[in-house]
Image (cartoon, rainbow, N blue to C red):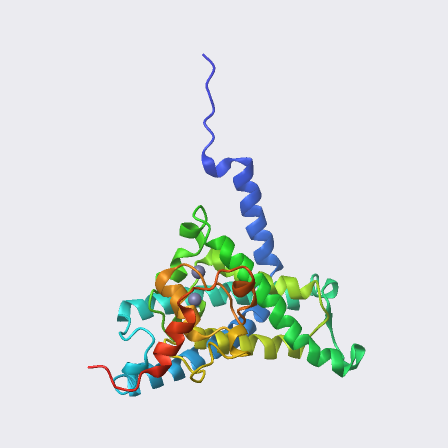
Length: 283
Ligand SMILES: [Zn+2]
Ligand SMILES: [Zn+2]
């Protein structure tokens, strides 16, 4: 009888190809760039989230509780989960940006440019709102896709474990979602002309807005939700509702797509006014 060779799963062609790919990537990576990016992304996240956490969740915890969108606080284990996932996300962000914008084999093929005068100052400033619109659109459609019932549990559930998010939740993504989120960097790298300072300023703004969106407190003034301008701007109340109810309010910076495609929650404006109307500290 002929003996049948049993091929262990780790010896299959696919597995070999997969591990070769990982080995190539590891050799390919310039780790100095990775550490540099990780330091920058990490510093921004920890400084911002820590400052706001200190203010809203520790120093004025009781005094400002009546203003909290959901008037209760997450548990310590929630903060720890949010921070651990955020650290993993930041490693993925640092890894992808080190390849796309720093690696000598990739960088020359991107739209990154050196001197601001190459495209002029008008373009330089116009690029910021353009980046906001592109990122908001990218985020909205990826986000809606991640809410598809066949994908949600594998990719987006981690972020929704924070039903009452804290500033630490800003980057609390499953690693698969982290790769999707940093896809915006690849979109920028191969579409519009990008200067290094565009990236620095834009991604700083992104984390500020992201931490605000998960703050648990509303910073925009009374009436902003119904205001002719405010109607189009995403708010902390809006994103907090998304975390609380899982349905509706998918935008990032703006509410254009939510309003155009009818995914804004019907109770959003009412909820915004209710949060901003509170004057008596809750008992
Ligand atoms: Zn979501
Ligand atoms: Zn969120």
